[in-house]
Image (cartoon, rainbow, N blue to C red):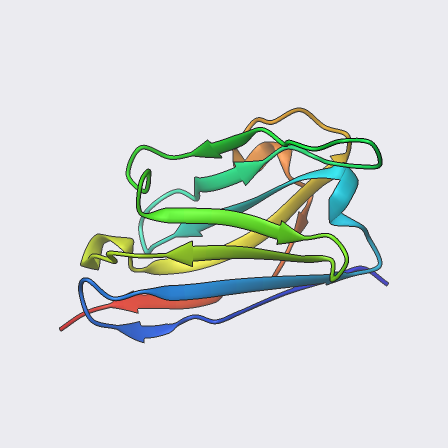
Length: 130
């Protein structure tokens, strides 16, 4: 059975940092484009950061960051642990949202839009507030 589980969300003050984790079972992240998305009430789900697939014999993967997080967030993965991370720094109130981890079918192109991702976690809430 395929399961994708996010963790690490919580309440932080503006300027704070948080690391989100996403662990998958029943599928491998190493040959899939993976990503983090977020959605706040009344807003459409939007791509935060996505990374192209990697596999045996590869070294680099392409990475996308939305303009609103560029320079503040870092996506990474540990293929041995089948885990995806999102390091979030300099958090601001507008970053408040439910954050979702997602994966495409194997070897899909790097297109960081929700419609390209078929496997989703349940989300973890990030709230940035004083």
